[in-house]
Amino acid sequence: MKILLRVSVSPWFKNLLRALRLLGVLFLLVTCSKPPPPASTSEVRVVIFHTADLHGRVHRLPALAGYLKGERAKERRRGARVVTVDGGDFFQGTPEGDLTRGRLVIQAMNEIGYDAACLGNHDFDFGPAGVRDLAARARFPLLCSNVFESSTGAPPPYVKDAVTLPEACLELRGLTVAAPRAGEELAFLDASSALARRSWTPGMARVLLSHLGIERDRRLPGIDLAAVLGGHSHTRAIEERAGGFPIVHPGSHGLSVGRLELVLNVATGDVRSFKANLIDLRTWRGPEDARVRALVRRGARRIAKLMEEPIGTLSVGLSREHAADEGASSPLGNWACDALKAALNADIALLPRSSLRASLFAGPVTRGDVYEAFPFPDTAQWVDMGGRDLRGVLERAIGDGGRPLLDVAGLEVHYSPSARASRRILEIRAGTETLRNDRRYRVATTSFLIETWLGAPPGEGTRILRDVLAEHLGRNSPLRVEYRNRIFRKVE
Ligand SMILES: [Zn+2]
Image (cartoon, rainbow, N blue to C red):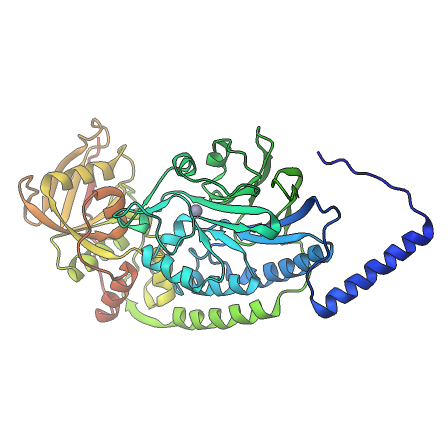
């Protein structure tokens, strides 16, 4: 711990110091010159502001920007070096985030003035091309030390391994959990292996931006870190690891900010002391930042107009649940699978029920309604599958005999919940015949299911499932879907 020295000085000298300090502040305000040197030339005081998991909550950003800009100016006047970082998952989760593919959030983050951000798993939702686009727009580096291109084993050129901030005596690195939507082009190493491959710049304090979640942060190898600034688990917490460094998790959605103050040895980057706290912005009453507010309002207005756009009419509502039997297929799932199967000219369609997030009601349907029902940006794709593999996938979908995890088209599935695991399916009908193990089927599904379940190379198709469904509804309006169950649980 740092030891504070007290030196007694005479009152007139105190007054002189106070006057000089005041003059210094005025001078700074007028000229915006560089901050005064720290109290001792052998140490530097660094204040790191930290957000994570903003998840497209753009309406929180004007307040966040107001707080950060005000506090940073205050800290700089006090001689601190100030750094602003984010722990990933910037945009996924709202129409403003998703429908701009993260661009609106990155624009606001540019305006806020971030120094670096770690990529989160959802920042890969639009594949490597999406990250490349955001990296080109961001005025700060996007960090990730554990992502590699599958073909070359090298880090992708648009992702930075580390950033060094010499004036703050810091080196920053990012780690993230594997992102299934990144596709086959990219591979993620586990945190320990990735860190073992990297060397740090000597003389700098090592700060890890982690999008691993707090559980994994607690198990990180002790590699002489100054701090772990985390995200992913949406936790609000400050903990001290056995090695004596803090783990800070600032929560999510821009509702709170982490503040970590480090006093560092300028020559070695060693931490002399630290102090961490969380600021709850829900109770903060300072002024919003006008520039970020204008930016967000403009962007949100465009999205609101897009979301109100009518795209079709439903004569009958499509619920995402079967009213009486949770084992049965759902009206919404049946329709989505039928539309997908038709669009990709497939024999069969499969959709994860977890991709269906809201029911569609009878009457006019807007783009916003379809967004809420299918918020994920997975693309519609098909794969060529043998009957035996397909049966395996359906057994997995039945799982422990509870609610099946998939909805289907072109199939009728009968199962027994009480049978032995992987022996629960009694019969599968494909069209007019029983599913044949020796036949190949063209199976329409989403990029997400292909990556996570099917283990097959993706086929053609780059259109987002939601857009395929919106187009089907538009073309067939007013749409009347007769519900017939496709998944039958044997009553025992
Ligand atoms: Zn995450």
